[in-house]
Image 1: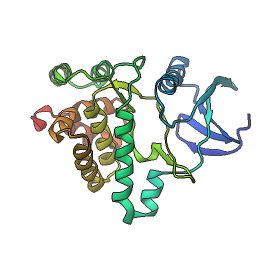
Image 2: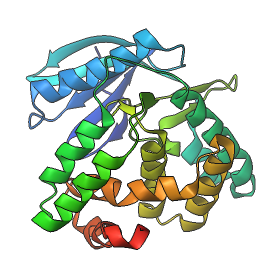
Image 3: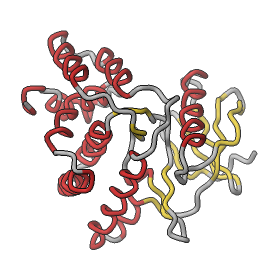
Image 4: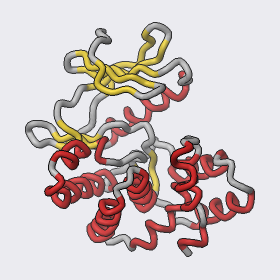
Length: 250
């Protein structure tokens, strides 16, 4: 495998292209368990749906670092297309929401439960006991669903190929659960990126296409904000803490 063509990098992972393959190399701070869990989640989605997603070929060690090798998908992300063609935002949002609703129409019974994952993250959030109690009570009161939820659904994870096929990548956070929770996270990601107008358009369109009341999606917002806060990004903290106020959405 050749590691000389970097296509994306963060402080804890680097993604390389090697021909028709992508090699995601994790920093040594990543545990083996976390890397294997990411690969397992994607493999389970592969096996239980007919969605267009990259296929995993192997999990390996490269110079002491764990790596996942999968298909390279040629094309541009919806995030790139939105930036390049702001006059087509409505068209791209339509495609974006249609793709998400298709994902949510699937099931993958071996994936982790979204409710359990959210509950665990709330406990890791460092919020005071009273706020954690209120959030846990809200999670318990949500309807139990088993829809396939991407968990990090945003335009940067949707690739349009030269043949106009739509692929969805990065299934590390995939779970089975409530569609409203997945929509709440997508809305939050738009807000965190400072795309307030697009966030509102997205929420309205998702609600219209799924016939899910916006109030149901909003009930998940304090929960997804608390779960996002465990990433401990200082630039996001104040914004997320303002969202965790449960009473605001009552």
